[in-house]
Image (cartoon, rainbow, N blue to C red; front, top):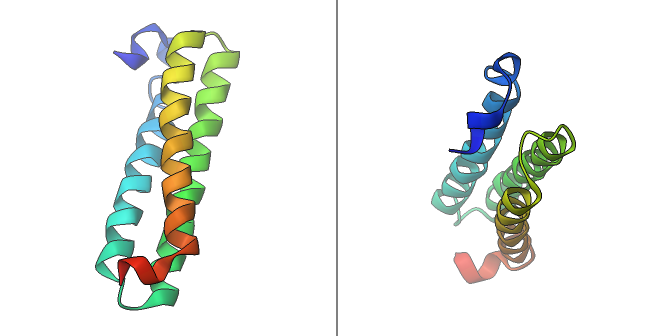
Length: 99
């Protein structure tokens, strides 16, 4: 469990931010895909997804700096964020492949 080593005062702030941003990334991608016929809307929702993914990375960096998560866990999760970011950017740059 990722959050088991977080101090109690972070349970409802930092952990909540990580959960909300990571879930929002997913939801924005879903919304973008459902609007894929409208290129501008598709790209707009994907840029929202990219922002949320970047925020997730930022909160993970903060958690690592505070020693709430170790290097291995950070690397594993950050790697997933980087891969997600690459996929989002590909979709933004190639919206015609999804319409």
